Length: 84
Image (tube, helix red, strand yellow):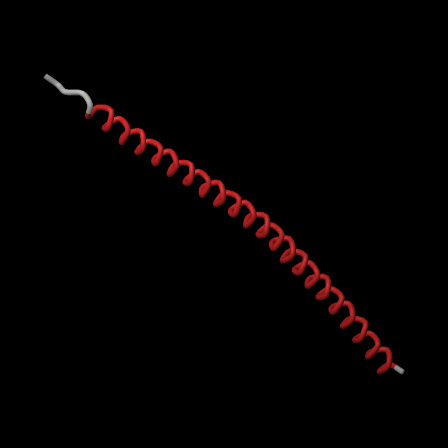
Protein backbone atom coordinates (compact mmCIF):
# COMPACT_ATOMS: atom_id res chain seq x y z
CA UNK A 1 0.00 0.00 0.00
CA UNK A 2 2.85 2.37 0.79
CA UNK A 3 4.26 1.76 -2.67
CA UNK A 4 0.94 2.67 -4.27
CA UNK A 5 0.86 5.90 -2.24
CA UNK A 6 4.46 6.66 -3.18
CA UNK A 7 3.79 6.05 -6.89
CA UNK A 8 0.62 8.13 -6.73
CA UNK A 9 2.56 10.94 -5.05
CA UNK A 10 5.26 10.75 -7.70
CA UNK A 11 2.63 10.76 -10.44
CA UNK A 12 0.95 13.80 -8.91
CA UNK A 13 4.30 15.62 -8.70
CA UNK A 14 5.06 14.69 -12.29
CA UNK A 15 1.66 15.90 -13.40
CA UNK A 16 2.23 19.23 -11.65
CA UNK A 17 5.62 19.60 -13.30
CA UNK A 18 4.10 18.76 -16.67
CA UNK A 19 1.33 21.29 -16.11
CA UNK A 20 3.88 23.97 -15.23
CA UNK A 21 5.89 23.10 -18.33
CA UNK A 22 2.80 23.27 -20.51
CA UNK A 23 1.97 26.71 -19.10
CA UNK A 24 5.51 27.84 -19.90
CA UNK A 25 5.22 26.50 -23.45
CA UNK A 26 1.86 28.22 -23.86
CA UNK A 27 3.39 31.50 -22.67
CA UNK A 28 6.26 31.09 -25.14
CA UNK A 29 3.84 30.40 -28.00
CA UNK A 30 1.83 33.50 -27.07
CA UNK A 31 5.04 35.58 -27.04
CA UNK A 32 6.01 34.25 -30.46
CA UNK A 33 2.53 35.03 -31.82
CA UNK A 34 2.76 38.56 -30.42
CA UNK A 35 6.18 39.09 -32.00
CA UNK A 36 4.87 37.78 -35.33
CA UNK A 37 2.01 40.28 -35.22
CA UNK A 38 4.41 43.13 -34.43
CA UNK A 39 6.70 41.99 -37.24
CA UNK A 40 3.79 41.92 -39.69
CA UNK A 41 2.79 45.44 -38.68
CA UNK A 42 6.36 46.68 -39.09
CA UNK A 43 6.56 45.02 -42.50
CA UNK A 44 3.39 46.81 -43.59
CA UNK A 45 4.83 50.13 -42.42
CA UNK A 46 8.06 49.54 -44.34
CA UNK A 47 6.09 48.61 -47.44
CA UNK A 48 4.00 51.77 -47.19
CA UNK A 49 7.14 53.86 -46.72
CA UNK A 50 8.74 52.24 -49.77
CA UNK A 51 5.66 53.05 -51.83
CA UNK A 52 5.83 56.68 -50.67
CA UNK A 53 9.51 56.91 -51.56
CA UNK A 54 8.80 55.44 -55.00
CA UNK A 55 6.00 57.95 -55.59
CA UNK A 56 8.27 60.81 -54.48
CA UNK A 57 11.02 59.61 -56.83
CA UNK A 58 8.53 59.54 -59.73
CA UNK A 59 7.42 63.07 -58.91
CA UNK A 60 11.05 64.24 -58.76
CA UNK A 61 11.77 62.62 -62.12
CA UNK A 62 8.70 64.25 -63.67
CA UNK A 63 9.75 67.61 -62.26
CA UNK A 64 13.26 67.14 -63.66
CA UNK A 65 11.86 66.20 -67.07
CA UNK A 66 9.62 69.29 -67.03
CA UNK A 67 12.56 71.48 -66.05
CA UNK A 68 14.67 70.03 -68.87
CA UNK A 69 11.86 70.76 -71.35
CA UNK A 70 11.59 74.34 -70.09
CA UNK A 71 15.35 74.74 -70.44
CA UNK A 72 15.20 73.52 -74.06
CA UNK A 73 12.39 75.99 -74.79
CA UNK A 74 14.36 78.81 -73.17
CA UNK A 75 17.43 77.97 -75.26
CA UNK A 76 15.30 77.94 -78.41
CA UNK A 77 13.70 81.27 -77.49
CA UNK A 78 17.05 82.85 -76.61
CA UNK A 79 18.52 81.71 -79.92
CA UNK A 80 16.31 84.25 -81.67
CA UNK A 81 18.06 87.15 -79.92
CA UNK A 82 21.43 88.57 -80.89
CA UNK A 83 23.68 90.29 -78.43
CA UNK A 84 25.37 93.32 -79.98
